[in-house]
Length: 121
Image (cartoon, rainbow, N blue to C red; front, side):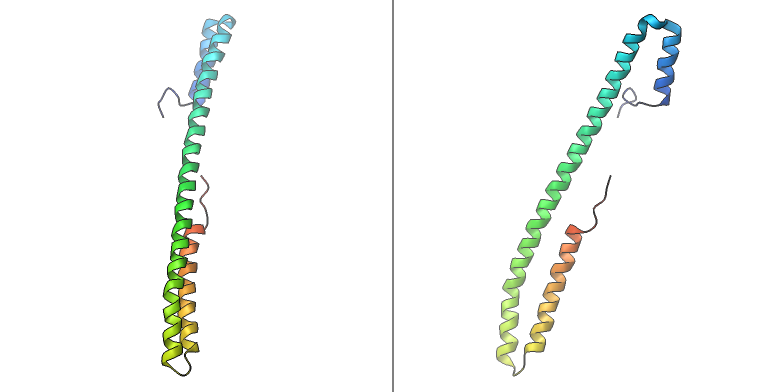
């Protein structure tokens, strides 16, 4: 942001001082100049918000893809984890339950980092 586009108290005071010096016949030019600066500042802020929204959308979409891939891999890993204890032992159900709870916990932790609280700027 340049010093010229920075709209503040000093700008308003300067415009009022210029009006006092120049008189009422230059009001339109002073108002137009000030309005142009306000318009540029609004456009710049709108562009910044648009860029921020694009970054957020891109980040969310990438997170969803990663979450989907993690889910597919979890199921792929979970199938052999389920088969081995059930075949190798007489009562493999507790091992299977613990394994799937671990897989679910990993997926939930990953999802919470993606879908966690959003910062508002």
